[in-house]
Structures are given as C-alpha cells and as structure tokens.
Length: 301
Image (tube, rainbow, N blue to C red; front, side, top):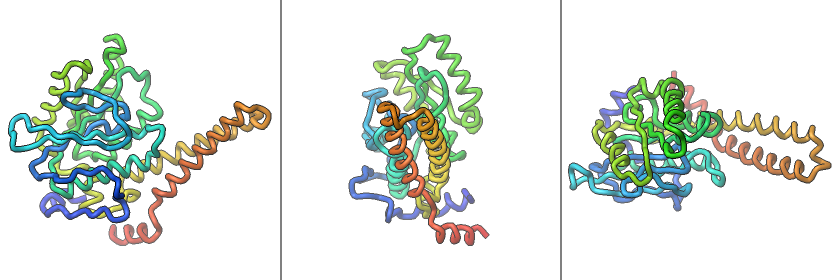
C-alpha cells in the first residue's frame, strides 16, 4: 500500500452501502478538530474513560465527549468498543460495528490520537479469547499505527506485585514484543478510584502526533473494501475456521462418550451443534464473493 499516496489525497466519503445499518451507533456532528481515542476494542469488560476510569459496558459501541485539556475549542472523543469474546454477539457482528464507527469517523476527517488496548493482568495465561483478540487488534490497527497504541494492564489489585510483574514481563517479552518494537507503549492502571492513573493514559496519547489512519479505515474508506476484504475480516475468518475445527472435534468426542444415553452429554452435544452452526454462518458471511476475488486479482496485476 502506498502510504504517501493515501495521505496526499483527500479522504473519500464513506457511505456505508451494504454495511451500515439504521440502528448502528455512529458519531454525528463529528469535527475535523476532534481527537478520537478508541479503547477496549479487545476487552468486553473495561474501557479507559476519564471521570469513570475503567468501567463495564455492553456490547454496543458508545462514545462520550469531553473538552480537550490544552485547547478548549477542541474535543476529545472516547470510544468504548466491545471485545471479540462477547457471549451473546457474534464476533463478525462486533467487527462490523467497530468497522462502521471507525470508517464513518475517518470519512468525517476526525483525527485519531491513539488506541487503548486493555489487558487484565489477573488472567493466568494468554490463550483462547485473549490471544485471538490480540490478533484482531493488530489487524484492525496495522503496523503504521502501532506507535499510537497504549497497552494498558488492569486488575493489579487482584494479584500480588510479584505475580503481576512476572506476567507483565511475559507480555513485554513475548506477546506484545512486536507491538513495542513498532512504538507502542506499556502502562499500568492501578485502581478504579485513581483518576490520575486514567489521566496518565490520556495525556500519554495526547502527547503523540495523531495517526493518519488505522489499517481498517484506509482499507474501507480509501480503498473501498468490504469487511471480508479487509485484513481484520480475513483474520477473523481464519480464526473462526480454527474454532470450527475444534468444535467439530469436541462433538466427535462427546458422541464417543455415549451422549445418546446421557441427558447431560446430550445437552452438551446440542449446545455444541448450535455453536458450530453459528460459527459456520459467520464464516459464510465473511467469504469474499468470487467476482470480488477476480476483480482483486486483476487490480493487483
């Protein structure tokens, strides 16, 4: 992708045809002087917000506005986004909601100051949903935006300092290593009642130059791609295929255990089948139509 070419031209108007829905949450009245800070895109449980610190939210995208700390003629727009581990909403729908908000704000020329990535230090290991969420986050942002990412660890009050620091080193030396090499920063959020900790995060972001765009914003607005054609869409489809294979394997094991004669196992089989059907539906929805793929091949020549 030619970054210079994308930055030099005026942002296209994104109409959201076939993607945006009437009940989607978007920012109306956005200004080019607005400073946008999305947070919680990989955590369904928390959001970094001034005045409320880290709090719990629903799976809907919410945004709230406060005056800029150094220029009262400008506004800071905090965007609370759901995580990709929600119990009641499909991952593909969560991706669509996040993509719609980001594409619309980018089309309205709103400036993105940085992105807050939240991780609970109380989690014993980086597997399953947290690891999938990290991959999705990376594909949403893209490497060029990593310098504006703040990696925030939370729930320090739930672990000993020694254990928390050991897990923090694992994040720094392994899972977050590439992001840190690209310019991301690590911070701790120590207490839900410590407003200064929240402001430390916000001020660190405001000290950076705004990022031109997240990868998914460029893909959807500048390059006019559909969600399945984006890097995040392709990554989610690959992840869902892995989950589908694991669920199908689980179904076979349940049958081997004699589910037909055990009500508890039979219920587990039925629940697993519903999950398989849901994942299969999401995979089909993220499939790029053949004509789109052919057109993409022709453009790349």
